[in-house]
Length: 155
Image (tube, rainbow, N blue to C red):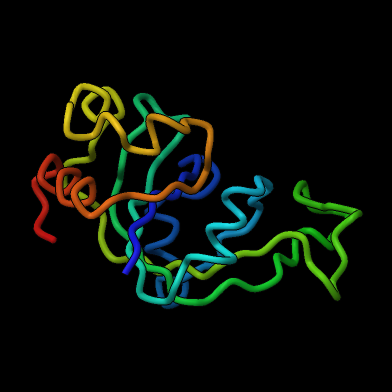
């Protein structure tokens, strides 16, 4: 099993929005970074665990948990000229961009703010901190456990 951190702006799509979706599941679209795309396409597996991170919040924070519930498939927003994620160079027969389905697991009672993550020496090598602008990043099992402890959550 892999562990991931996936970022979303809460005013665009929050953990509460995911919880309110049909079957508590939605697709994770609009990724336009090759490293993040490669994680989805090449490494994410059904059953992988996700830290749902609210970026562009005050403060940014880990808000809860989700699970990967599909393998990667073509991101249809790349083919829609009316979408802000439209990519005229993406070909439906050989898509450049992919997405996965994500299912809500739970919202943390106590979110884990970015300043607390930065202050924790056990998390100093966390990809969130070393590759800050990346919308999807790997999380080690030790980091996964530490974030849950900081949130006061059982795994």
